[in-house]
Length: 189
Image (tube, rainbow, N blue to C red; front, side, top):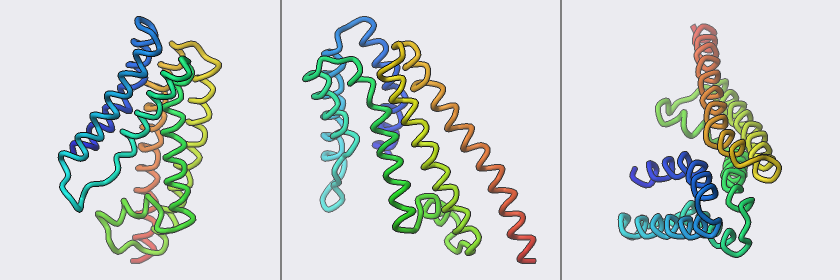
């Protein structure tokens, strides 16, 4: 639970941290901060979890890799690539689950409804595909803002607009899901 909260905070706060650091400090400072946060995440993972439940902390490793890349390249654009990598990772994860089912959305749905109907399984695969398109478009926009936009535009998009778009997709999908569920239940009656 603590690692999920930390992951969410890091992901949400990262654009603002980049903005503040690049506006008032050097790009190297951001690299060092990224190294420290990544190392701290890995330390927490190792100290909180006991064998055999210890697992590799991918976000900590990604932060360390980005920190090292920032320091090595001395480039602000490198610091701005984090949202691109997150979207690529999510696209890969969701896409992989479509090739090797069950899909991510089906796994999540089965937590509360273990006995999904065949129509619901098809629906969850479509929702997973929709999220793949979202991550592809969002990652492309994040890449564009990383190299061809001002720091302010990058921060606005990756720190606010991308999250609003994600929330909008969640909301629209929720209402569609209710209609699909009602349609399936009506057909079963």
